[in-house]
Length: 90
Image (cartoon, rainbow, N blue to C red):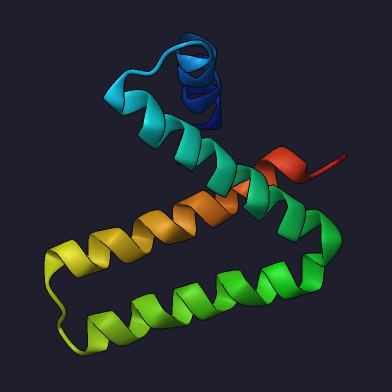
């Protein structure tokens, strides 16, 4: 979900397909759409969600978490920022 344009292209390919990977694509699109709605409905709350995710990343670093855990948390943050970029100026 970090690349909305790629997701959009994949949705177009999967629009009329029942391939197994299309299930994941459709779920990712639904999740991304939900995040966009959250951002539009309450931008301040969405900003707090970003701050909480950043704090969690900092805590993971302090706890010397695995690189996988750090990567996953950073990816969550990147998705939230992607939503902000897409919804800014709307």
